[in-house]
Length: 204
Length: 204
Picture 1 (cartoon, chains in turn blue, green):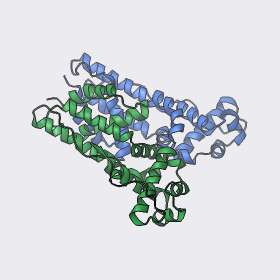
Picture 2 (spheres, chains in turn brown, cyan):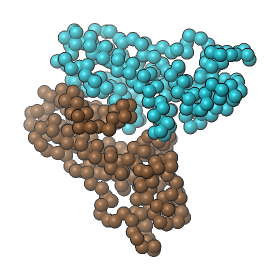
Picture 3 (cartoon, chains in turn blue, red):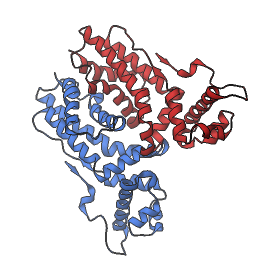
Picture 4 (tube, one colour):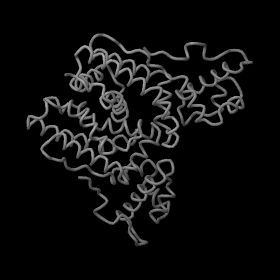
């Protein structure tokens, strides 16, 4: 299931005297908002301050650079892939999981993440590697492994189904076809991916 | 085999009165040189003109913008993947092909291409989609399909081995692990990819 750490509290407080965590959350929320509307290149500390209804100094006091701010905003705001489906069939589980990954990708935070991935240069991208890896890739791969492991236990999937490269195929294909083919991953494309690739790759 | 359209003629002419195709080639060559040294963000029309030992006006006369210039430079300079290996085994053929793709990626033009892919924003990247697709992805996938088709004819590979999603797995994994894991694709990684994924995916 996709949840967001943002749902725990209102994202933007109305009080003009917000402090500490409340103000910080409003600033991080405004940063994500900027990323998903004007993108990485268009994001400015001024714009974020305006969005959070605070002054530029309040932003710079906490985050010396745009990079620092966005790293924190992504870290806190990324949707979490928290539970693996368990429908009794690897095919159905993987299809469901693909749907959850798409849901995360097309969330506001997902748009923000894609904006950073697509727009920033290689040197800057380095700084986001850990955030992206720990926040998106690792959880997805972990859930895929869980689904495949259950398939092995049921005798549906061959030994070797949880090999590292095997469990990278779905996120790799999602990234590749989004980037190269401009795919937005309709259901029928997920089905083609699972039936042409994952089912033959995993079966005993 | 990886060849370059650049090898047909010397890239930079010495004459100060170069015209037409000779001057154009020198300019495109200087653009690639800039891309592979200072990257997309660092490339300037002035720098390209200086590199080609010509004036800025000579560049602007032919290419009104940096984008136009780089589109043409990539189109002409990209290494060509022209022939599929035929070693009698799909495993060996795919390993050889992966090596050729790495060779192309780490060529000067390959660096230039990666620089553009990594650095430019989404809107600009749209302009390079066709160049990248027609120059790199399509030829790679075509050669993979050729290798797999021969495997089917030999009875080594299952029907369905040439399905679109199946033949996208190698380029997808190359892109994904370069970008997400920072992999530079050592031989041992190619072997893991082929043995963990492609051999089980293709076998009858």
